[in-house]
Length: 328
Image (tube, rainbow, N blue to C red; front, side, top):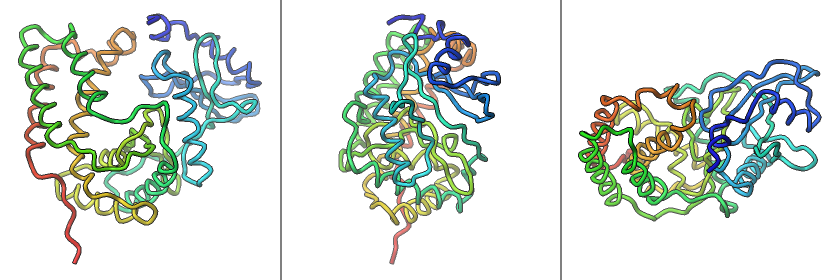
């Protein structure tokens, strides 16, 4: 892997300006960085005072075919009137390249923060997720991966084993706890679902509110179970989560049928996300942005807390899964 490209060390402001100029866009403001660690994303204004966002993809993460599938999914959703931030086309292409970097330009869309504790807003989101999945069911990704144990647990476990950030005195017990968590997930995981194209990372931070929801950031889009796009919206205690899920599913089923067998995958998916996220931080540690923004990863207390989180998730996995209130 080319470390300089991988860590964006060759992506300079002049490089970004030149890339945009190639597409006929003259930047008339500064490049304002937006919150993104995986890619580099900037907001700007052109000479006609139109606002845009340009996204430079992390090299060697996704192939051109995989990024194009993300873009096509966004365009499919837009065609089906699902509110989503979709890339703009330049000479019939949404995926652009400059000096070895893939990038795309999006319209700048504003909005308020989605209120995760607002059941009215949750109902709207459920309804549009039903529509999003209606589009997602039309075909599967051919180049993007499908969610599963291998990508989210087995490969991350290998990364953790070779990680030098884990204190030597804690490493053996940490890996034992990780293995126990993987075993607990394997005991609960099943394939009684239809895999479809997903948003993939549908948490409150990726939903804007503009008289209704607007979905942003399809960077983690992949095939998988519908519940993946629902469970991260839940918050609070079990009773609150049950009410939220019932609200989401009732609205969701106005457009797509929901398989209640997938409720049993919520806690396995949560465990998979915990392990995958930790391995993602380790994978990106050579990027200077990560030690600067996640310094606690090199601290002993952090790994002790992670072991406690894994242990608690093992306990949760042994409890009965979330159940909806019976309808009579």
